Length: 233
Image 1 (cartoon, rainbow, N blue to C red):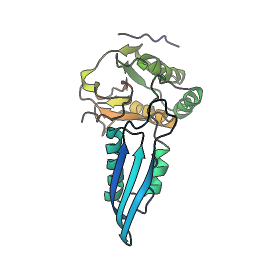
Image 2 (cartoon, rainbow, N blue to C red):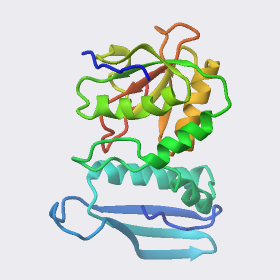
Image 3 (cartoon, rainbow, N blue to C red):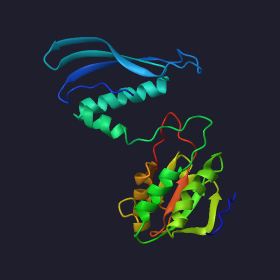
Image 4 (cartoon, rainbow, N blue to C red):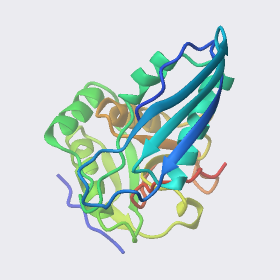
């Protein structure tokens, strides 16, 4: 195997047709960091004036104002787009949690096997891997992803994981599979993203016009923060 070197919530359940005005009350910083009480939301008041019409007040504790605003946006979208809340709840089980502070990101043995199973019997590919230099766990996380790729016969560009800042990707936190055109990603990028998804490792598909049309880059950004940063268009 080639050596790798580093360079440099609970959701409110309601019928989709329910038209409600939602008031989200956020208790920010109400509890100490060492308080074992988990964050939670509950309905504290409801005023249903008619069938499927009314106001509901939801109180959430142990949340920052930024997270509270995001919850409000999620609930608003469920109502405005008439999404099925039960389907939303099911999809939440597929979403990765934000890494705990102080716990390094990595690929465990189960995830490694899932990546290998996803790539088994399929054409191999070439991928460049770059970790943000400010991501303290970035290099090791990148290596843990590169290992099953190499075991599946893939090649890592330059046989190394680079640690360098890329201005076009600086705002991308977490993992991203970067291609020149998201509408027409090269086959290795499609297979790589599918393998990561199979291992329940979230990776956004991001476009970067500086890449060659057939290039695939795995970007390991800084740890995801509480406020997501939109990728460049």
